[in-house]
Amino acid sequence: MNAARSSADPLRVLTLCGSLRQASLTKALLLLAEREAPQGLAFANEPLHDIPPFDADIQAMGFPPPVARIRDAIRSADAVLIGTPEYNFSIPGVLKNALDWVSRGDRPPFVGKAVGILSCSTGPWGGARVQYDLRKVMLSMEAHVIGKPEVFVGSASGKFDSTGGCTDEPTRDAVIRYMAAFKRWVTATRHFNMENQEKK
Image (tube, rainbow, N blue to C red; front, top):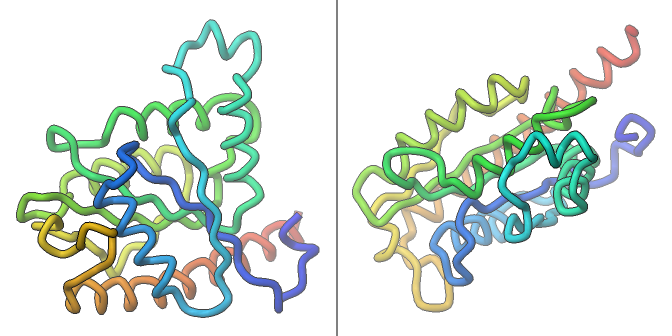
């Protein structure tokens, strides 16, 4: 589907937020990334609220509609940008559950997909541990996760205001640099995938 599009079309980026809270800092970080992204990226979000706990018996009867929807959204996107907090040194259950669902069945949608990861926490480390756990998961799903730069927003509660706006210029600058690199990564990954399709 993507190969038939014009090179002038914007690259489609799907955002996934690992926090369900309406006023979450992670959501504010993803919105900052969207606002500060370079031209040529078009964003859409897929909420995780209504995805049921993974159950292989349910999968055997077919993917539930919320799971089918998110699988289709990932497949049709050029890239996925994941924002996540860190829960108990690792991946939030709601995010890991969604990833477990979409990794199953035929044509898993993350195969060959460009992926970015942003994290934040109220502690000083900014979610470093969750990022590295999440990278391992994405590796098993054959996604192409950008390696550098990285964004870990520590002490995040002091860097966003009550409306979700970023009040910390170093954080804003880091996100601007990340999104510029992410666009280059998505472009290169898409070009690589198109070349491989042509060789088949």
